[in-house]
Length: 444
Image (cartoon, rainbow, N blue to C red; front, side, top):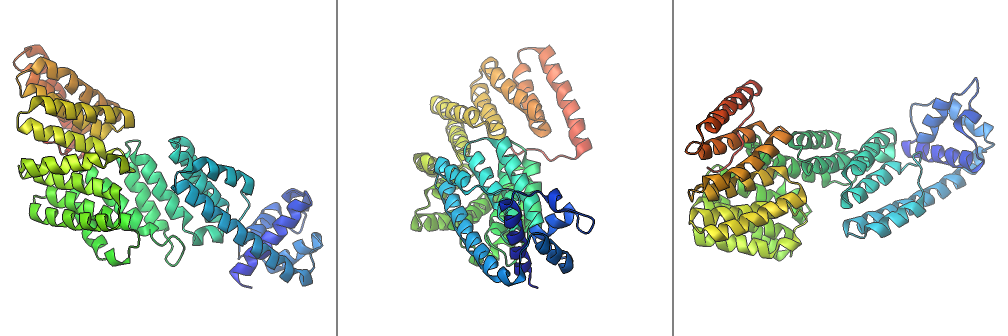
């Protein structure tokens, strides 16, 4: 008997039992346990077929009626699958309330073959509503149920759920956990299953998290491997994400001309495909490259172009970095007022979006803006806010940088405070050495 037939017979049995208002324990006896009945209904292939026949006899399901019942079950599953596809489209296109209304009308219980998909879509709904805990709960349920159903495994819902969990972790400032989830998703991916592009989405997200965590060597090795599969990637947004990442990584390794080449190639693809979101991110990446090269005019043009496209970016957090980099551009040219204006926008967005990494950076840079004007006392509150963020989230390397900036301010103002900062820098450095944590990259 094929796996598909076993699944369909199990679903027929489950539907007949539920139509008659029977519980698993109502059918259990000395010859068949509740657990075995559950396995039969779930389509577990290792169940003895004699027990399946015994259960069918208990429910008065005749073998001759099976083909018709199975055909009816196939039709029901096809209809449910189509409805779930429609619901996912509604969620992706921001019609979340209509999507959830249809999901409730569909009324799939956790014993249904597509229960894992249901929980996955509920997770996407909660994520869109910014209810992270509910989203994570739904994704974990999707993973659990996908392991129990052959349908769930084929759909790659487990891999897709791990990807969504990684995104949830990223936006809650848990970078290492985000990386772990992408690794789990890649391990769970089933070759030949549905959602074939999810492996590339997981790879791109993992590389983005590695880059932001400062694990540049791993990210560089990963991007070179990923580039070999570029022609297999159908989603333009994923291709452009890889172009953006390659631009960042080449810039950070001071390969500026190569960074510019990949950024401009990516921008041409983004223009051709009207992908405004990725165009925003690529203009920002190109601006960062010109900033590092001290090509002020080109950098300013890139940043202003990016900001003009900000409403089209799905991941609003990137605008924090763009405003911060624009602030650095003006700071380096000693254009203090435009620098403060851009940095205040970065801080506003950082607080609004609860992005502690980017917000910490913005606080440091606006502190630098005051300190470089000789206004050390005015710089202190911003460095203190950066320090508070680093301590709260246990970002040791960022904490070390914050203490150093404070020490720079207090050195000429208050020797006692200066010594306190030095002592705390030493304590943090000891912990960094013990934990072998790499320093967070921040321009001085």
